[in-house]
Amino acid sequence: MLRISKLFVLSVLCVIGLFAQEQVVDMPSRKWTRREFLTRDPFIVAWEKNQTYYLYKSASYKDAEGKNHPCFAYLKSKDLEEWEGPFPAFIPPKGFWATKDFWAPEVHEYKGKFYMFCTMNSDTRKRGTQILRADTPEGPFLPISEFPQTPADWLCLDGTLWVEDGKPYMVFCHEWLDFRTGPKGMGGTIDAIPLTDDLSAAAGESFMLFRGSDAPWNRNRANQTYVTDGPFLFKEDGQLRMLWTTGGWAGYTTLVAYSESGKLAGPWKQYDEPVYMNDGGHAMRFKTFDGKMMTTMHAPNGGATRVIMIEGPILGNDIIRIKKVR
Image 1 (tube, rainbow, N blue to C red):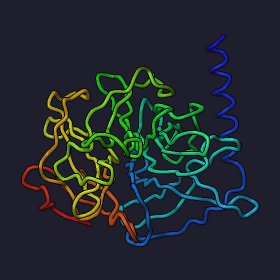
Image 2 (image 1 turned 90 degrees about the vertical axis):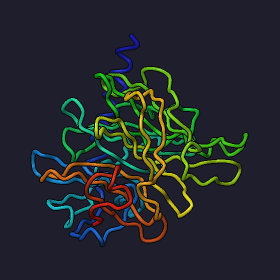
Image 3 (image 1 turned 90 degrees about the horizontal axis):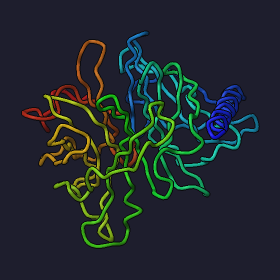
């Protein structure tokens, strides 16, 4: 009976979501150079099938009555320099739980489908990361659960996908705002939670990977709190690594952590040198169609925030002295 009920709820959510995508949505698109459009937390998918890059971002649209509403959108490009968009990726259906703080969408291909991990908030439920699904990178993305997969009693954000030994996990930030008071050294954390095989729900308890205060370049904020933001996991030189961002002495600072065991459970250690310390962050990595490894992030964190791209390795002899910044 419980299984039937769950399937029924998910079917209703999908039908409502599909209807929402068909409603009147005013989201004017145009052509841009990469230096023209403003965005935070850029996430890029390089889809081999049509040789197109997709950049996902927070956005808004006007309904038929001219009212603004938050949503998620994408821009697309053939060369990472000339872009077109935005186009709607997820338009919240009527009655959807989230109403504000639509942040940091990222898309992962998993078992032949595309999954958007996105952070949202409302006045009645704490901020969390929810997973949406689509058949292609262009969507429409639809909910596969009623609420976020992150713990309901925590302030969470910036969930990302990691698959280890065939088992999916969400790695996410337990936000520093939950640690505004407490002993010295307390601060935001980066945690992981196992997911069911279809990514629709948590499959166990979350576990902490490390604290924001573990990083040598992290600057203490008021009330002994340390920011954790934007985790992204990747393997390089046979090592499991994680890009993440915090508040450094020179502004928003991007760091690299690594797992000593090579497994998600860690223990995790921090490299002494930051990848980028000039007020830029929320980074991710992808491979271009001509085989180059690229790291992208937004900078500066305040003001006219744009997408920057760093070509080549981010550790070893190339740390700080990066090959090319676009």
